[in-house]
Image 1 (spheres, helix red, strand yellow):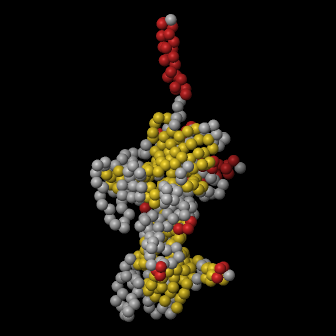
Image 2 (spheres, one colour; image 1 turned 135 degrees about the horizontal axis):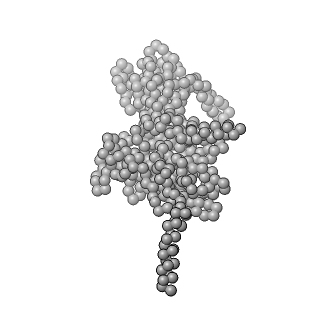
Image 3 (tube, rainbow, N blue to C red; image 1 turned 135 degrees about the vertical axis):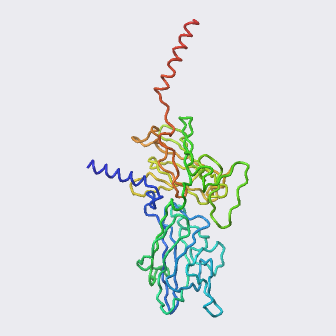
Length: 431
């Protein structure tokens, strides 16, 4: 029995140490983005489809400029019409005659979401968010995007053939091929009648941090009330000044202009860590039955605001979290009975946007936790988090041997003993 418990502990320790850069995130083991294709109607030469993009991730969301879906047709298909989205290029449609040309004749079309405020006749349900997808925990009402299209022109074969080579158009994601699944079912007439698609395919896209960025994007610094030392982010956590692929601006310099509608390479304020984001964890106070910590998120990115940001923290005492003062919080019980991971994000219209670098480019909160009998201690860095992620990307932690340590009582006593002896001799001499 003891050997079994040791193996179980070793297993969970192993998966907790795996980085999401390998395409598997142990803090969200079932997270992915699924693109569902529903064939609703197939007539001679035309196929009506509904495509839905589901963000089945607990905390990782799709930021502006949003998704840009791409695929390759296997035949001579064209998109005759679309609702809820649009193709970026119409392509060469000269072989079609008549007053109405196809919406897109590209062999490999690029599809983007409509912007908010699009014409009502062009909208569909769950469309028109500019390609932004929220995470399931942060906003369950905005984690789906849907558009419809009429596809035809595939020669004499009217049977619909799924395309290939899917790409979500978001850095870090890679997509597999289409897999045929059970047809989707839809309810009508207030739930009294059910209809279903002719056929349904799923395309699964996974995230890899190493594909999204060659270097980390955030780092962690630490401090504690019982030690005057502030442990800074490790040097060159996200790159070093002067290295290829790094851009930093010193105080007094003018930042370069960014290209419109593109996610620019992070242009950060020059620092030793060179990270766009720094998270500072401070052990603020200890009470009889509780302890308090303060988290501060600072934006060093000069060119970018972070909307709908979030933090994921791994700490064994989160199971006894009592109060969060200015952030939203939700536990992430990824393995059922293990409650050591939580997600923090901003309050709507208050602090849900982390502004670009400057005097307003930081957010902070305090959390109150109950001291769990038998496991709580400030020794050996136990009060500091094991892992922190910002917007789903893992942050660089300082080495454990550099964590602020408790004062050594024995060392303090031995250091003051000579002073006490000299002071006593001085008093005796004066008397």
